[in-house]
Length: 141
Image 1 (cartoon, one colour):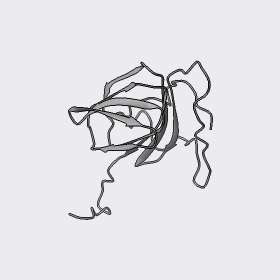
Image 2 (cartoon, rainbow, N blue to C red):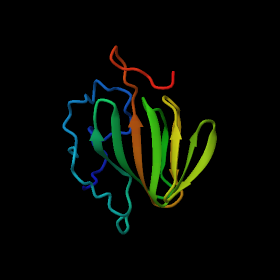
Image 3 (cartoon, rainbow, N blue to C red):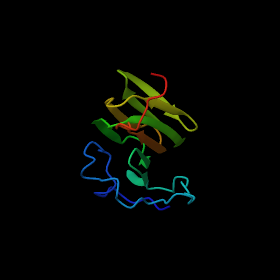
Image 4 (cartoon, rainbow, N blue to C red):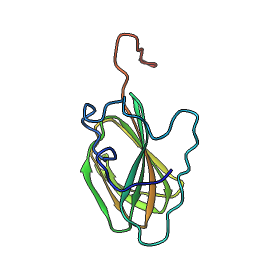
């Protein structure tokens, strides 16, 4: 799977689901394998690629160069940050955290977050939105 620079379909702001409807053709179809390749040689530039998008989930591959910052924003869902390579710091839940290769961090819906590359980093960002409707039962409530 190639990673392409920021593009209207590949945005970090997933607030407006009407702008990016779930019927948009996903880049990866069910049953396909995705190769989330290692960081390339210099120069590393900030890029993101929307890998999967369904009615209730998005998976984004994000490349953050050392020293680059992604300003504070919110995702409309629960978020899992998984650092594949490198190291980042991020502010969420009112604290600054560090995430290095092999670690992941989970936080709740609508939580403001900003991310800064400490080293060149590759992240998988999974955003899970709540299912709403009459046929959905919440487990544990």
